[in-house]
Figure 1 (cartoon, rainbow, N blue to C red):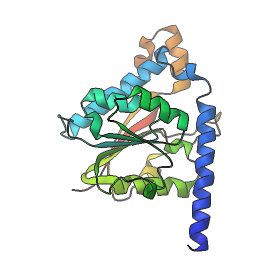
Figure 2 (tube, helix red, strand yellow):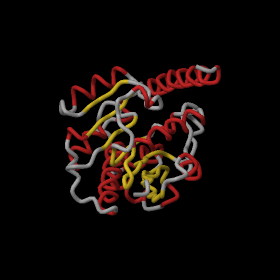
Figure 3 (spheres, rainbow, N blue to C red):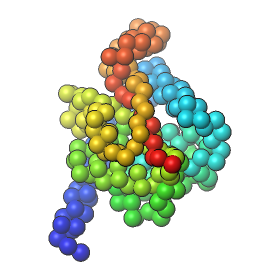
Figure 4 (tube, rainbow, N blue to C red):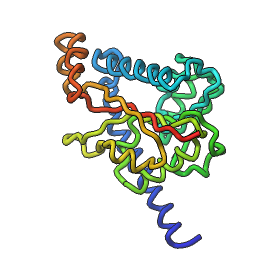
Length: 244
C-alpha cells in the first residue's frame, strides 16, 4: 500500500472519530429532539409528507420492492418511517457509526432490517453490491462532516451503491449555524459538486429550528404560518437521480 493511501486511511479514521464526537455532543440533550415537543414533531411530519410527495412525483406509488440504504441511520427512526411508507423491512439497510445507536436501532426495528456498524465512506468494509439500491438516503449527515475530501468519498460510496434509475435522497440544511461549530451547511452548489453525474430536483423545507422552537411555544399552528415564507426554511429535500 502506498504512502498516500495510508495517509488517506488515517485521515478518514480521524474524521470518523471526530464525527462520533460531534454526534455525541449534538445528542446530549435528547429533549431538543423529542417528538413530545411540537417544533420537533412538526418538523418531522413536514419531512415525512415531502418524502411521500417525492416518491409519488417520481412515479413510485408502490414501494414494496424498493431497496433502500440509509447512511447514518442513527437509532432507526427514519428507517421506521420508510417501513410505514410501504418499503419491505427485508429491503432496508442502515449504516451507523455509533455502537449505542446501532443497538437501539436493532431493538426498535423489525429483525429483517439489516443494521451495519461502521464508516460508510469505507464502502469496501460492507458486503453491499454496487448498483444494488433504488434509494440511498442521508439525513443531516453531511452537515456534520467538516472535511471536504471525506464528504466526497462518502458521496462517491453512496453513488456507487445506487442503481441506474434510482437516486440519492438527501435531507440536510444549507446554511451555517454560527452558534454551532460542529456543523456546517451544505449549499446546493456543493451538492452538485458532490454528485456531478446526478440530475437534481430540490424542495426547500423545515422552518429554521431556533425560530420554530420560539413560535411553537406560543402556538403550534404558528409553525405553518411562519414556514409559508420560503426564506425562513433552512433545509432541502433533494432527489439526485442516476440516469437509467
